[in-house]
Image 1 (cartoon, rainbow, N blue to C red):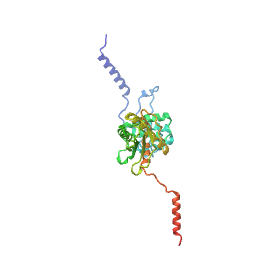
Image 2: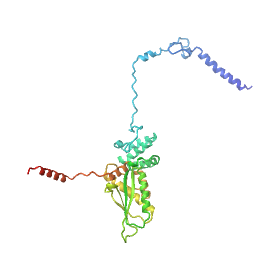
Image 3: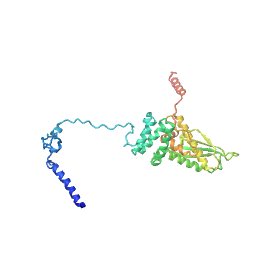
Image 4: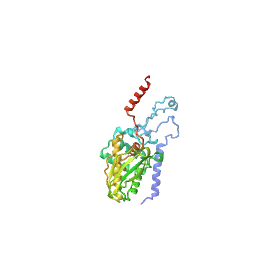
Length: 331
């Protein structure tokens, strides 16, 4: 005969409840700490008939309060990657002090910063590999891809128009019938300003020579210069000769040449690790996006927009001293 499930459930509950009551009826759950109560015999297997020993007296609160504190203060967690104070605003040259540790260390630091969600600092750490270390081609490729991935997600660095470095992007040509020069030059200047994160303001200046008999497809000379009193501060000059009225070819050659001008000047200055030579003639934007850092841009523009320090020749100093000596001699 089949037993109804309700009776089975009631019997199971009764068995559990009876077992629990029989085993715990002699235990005192209500006594406060410190009161000595004998433990039930069943917790001493093999010695059910013996009087169980009592637990040691618990340590009183007064004893604890009278003892001197011996616990050492918690030391701050070590920072082997030297990520710095993540709560403070970083500078444009942040993590330059880690250059001596090598590109591999900065790659680990940049990766850890990305894991922590510190994307602004991670971007700076990736850039320091390019402008302060000597990365291998494989490391340079990894850094370029990482910077290109992060840069569009972050705001531009400079938000103050007065903090921009003003430069002229100068073009010299005898072409008179090439209508692509003006719009392409303006678009290139705007692209460069964006790539510098608004650190550099570039104004295109096109100079056309009126020479008769010159063929329409004549070279175009490109170079950078300062503005105003600093116009004499100039970069090298490179000429290009793209087809006439071909905006796409003109844009590619302009960008490739401009990148080479920046790379050559930074190489000659020597204070920062220069960017790699141009390697994407079909997509020259990639060279700017993956190899030029904001610190590169700032240093390049600053050397062209500031007046050079002029040291008086030593011969003039000697002449001045001789004149002073002669004037002091008695008549």
